[in-house]
Structure formats: C-alpha cells, structure tokens
Length: 493
Ligand code: SIN
Image (cartoon, rainbow, N blue to C red; front, side, top):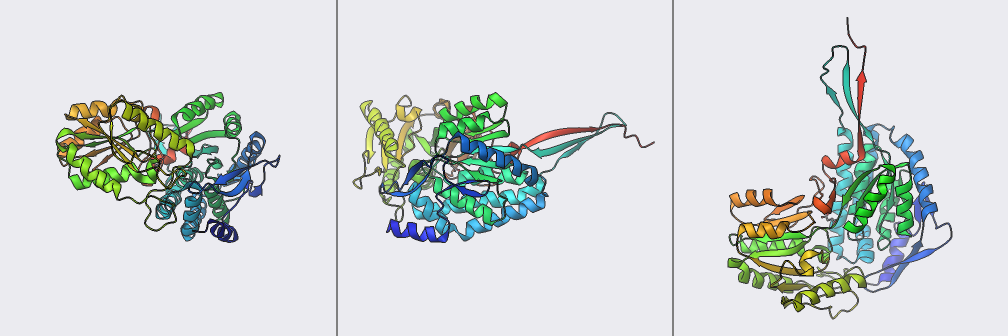
C-alpha cells in the first residue's frame, strides 16, 4: 500500500482533518504547536496535528456549554434524527474510516472496518434510545400531591478515549451523551486523533450543531486538568488505564462530577476438561488476539484444566501459528503491529520475567522479523499466577497458559486480581456454566464465546476495572440526572 497516495486520497475526500474542532471551527493550537501522528506499521509521519492545552480546552468547554443550552431543549425525536443521520454517514464512509484507523492504529483493514460497524452501531442504538428516556410517576402517600421523576441530561461531558479503538470508544460515549441532550468535549488519544476528527466532521455534516461535539488533544495532563477543574463539565467518561482512571476520579472530586470509568482488565479464560476443544480454541484465539492483544477484554490468562491441557496447548499453538502478521493493508493479514515501541518493550519484559521463572515458550516469544513494532504471536506454557504476565495486562499478542486441577481452584485463581472486567468460560456442562458465571467477580462473562462486545449489552467492570456501564439501555443513565418533582395542592375537590 502506498501510504502517501492513500493519505492524499483521504485528504481530498475531506475526511482526513488535521485541526481540532472547537465550536464547529477547525482550529490550530493557539501557540501554533503541533505533534506528529505516526503510522505504527512503518513509523512514517502521516500528518502533523495541533498540540492543544488548557486554554483551548476551556474555550471548547465554553462553547459546549452554550450548545448544551439549545441541544438539550430539542425534542428527543429531533436529536434522534440527527444521530441517525450521523450513523448513516459513518456507514457510508466506512471504507475511508477503516483506512484511517489502519493508518494510525495499525489494525488490519478488515478488523478496522469491523470497528467502524461496531462503533457506528452505538450511534444507531443511541438514536433509537433517545426516544425512550422515560421518567416515572410515583403513587403519592398524600392525596393532594403528585410525585414525578424526570430524567434530564447531566450537562457538558468530558470524554477521554484511548488509541486501541479510535472510533468505537468515542461513539460508545458520545452517542448516548448526545441522545440524552448532553454536549461533549472529546479528548482522543494523541496517538490516534485522525479517526476522532473524521467522525466529528461527519457529525457536523449530520446536523449535530457546532459546539455540541468538540475535539481537543495535545498536552494530555493540561487538557485533563482543565476538564476536571471546570464547573461547567458535569461528567467525565474515560476508557484507559486504571492508573489514569484513579487520577481522574480523584480530580473529579473537586467539583463532584459524575464519573464513568472503563479501565484495565486481567481477563481469565477458563478451559475445562469438558469443553468442546474446537470451540475453546476458536474462542480463546478470538479473545486473545483481537487487535493484536490490545483490548481491555483480551484474555490475559488462559487457565486450562489438566485433563485437556496438552491437547489444548497443541491445537491452540497450531491455530496461532497460522495467523499472518503484517501491515494492515496487506491481504490476509490478521495481526498488525503494536501501537509503539513502549508497548513492545512491555511485552518483552513480561515474557522475559515468565521464562526466567520457569515458563516455557511454545510458540513465538520474540520480535517479528518484520521489525518496527511487530511481535510474533506467542504462546507460553507453565505460567504461574504469581508471574508478572499473570498479574498485569500484557496488552500484546502473548497467550499465557496456566494449568489447574479443580473448578474451585480455577475460580480462586481467576478472582485473585484487583481487575474485574471480562472473563471467559469454556465448558459443555450447563450446571457449571451457571455456577462459574455466578462465581466470577467480573462485569462481563463469555460462556463458550470469546467475543461478547455489542452495543445492546452493558459493557463495564467491577473492582478496579471501573465504574458504570457503556452501551445498552443501562449506558444511557450515565448521562442523566434524576429529578424528583413534588406537585403540591393538587386535591381535585
Ligand atoms: C476496550 O478494549 O476497552 C474495548 C473493547 C471492546 O469494546 O470490546
């Protein structure tokens, strides 16, 4: 793929924006500072984008607040119509959006277009759900009173999003926020801002009014501080690391904002002796190697019962070996590069630690011969739950296999972590499916299935994996306040 040609083509389509968006205006940093956006597969600079800070963020918050006053007053039907139009535009441009995702994030084009479908679905769902934000009437204990519950938009939302899903993590937040009547200041990752800008361009084209969706990025700590300190920002929604999530939660306390956090995981994937081997291999492969292992719900520890361990290790390693690694535009590639050098070094250090403590590399275990940030799809056996790789999210294409004897032991190991986002169970025993699903301290459980994310189901974690839920009807509440109205002097006689 000739990247420069593609960039030029995307440029002429009007989707490759390289300025931030404040109040409907494409804007440079006030001091003219820029930062480069790289293609992780080649290291090439794709474009230079503004490096904004606190001042620009405060202006974005002000215009978002102005826009909130009118956007929140539109009828739900009107907001719904514009969101639907945004969805239609995202789908009409899915090829170009997929190309932008592959260029700046690295995932294979087919997977990138899959992300566009997934991301757009949150906008479609929000357009539908906008019309279903019901209040309530409570039977009054007093004859002359009527008690009502209204659901109202929380206000301006600060949405801080990661690089691993440059579109879907934005739409999963911004869709419901807009549907509820909120306006947003998005701070996408500086590693993948181009998808955010393209999505914002399409939002403008869809008739989402100027100021309702703003995008700023650059100096992340300054932008974060401005969002946290503002009294006009009433909600922070974040996907990213647990460490940053904790800081945001503490910072939001200054002005007692609502907070939702979708943080790191340490997903166990438990394969019982009574699992269907083929289903288990396919499921574990899907959850482990999606986005080259760079998702919060990727299996981080594959727990395999002793009776099936050898058979599973062989079949799984064969399946992993067949995965083609390469640049995301190459036909047949299913594993792209890691996002940057720091990500590869983290993977390397975890593998080194595991091997030094007795683990055995069954496949891969080193950088790929393609160079750059490519890493070989890797399977490591004889992992112990005390090893670095089992305690922390590896966020890379490394599958650690842990051997266990009993169901109780598997549950104990699975829950022995501060994280609680996703877990997976493979078994053909129906009683066990229920028992283990109920015993796992996780927000999401996939049973005989490695890919569970969908716009219609609640996504989120327990323990240090976060607060709140995204997607589904439950995700709407995160952007709403409940107001109780008591009508007095209502007796009819
Ligand atoms: C994430 O990695 O944070 C999101 C994954 C998903 O939506 O499936």
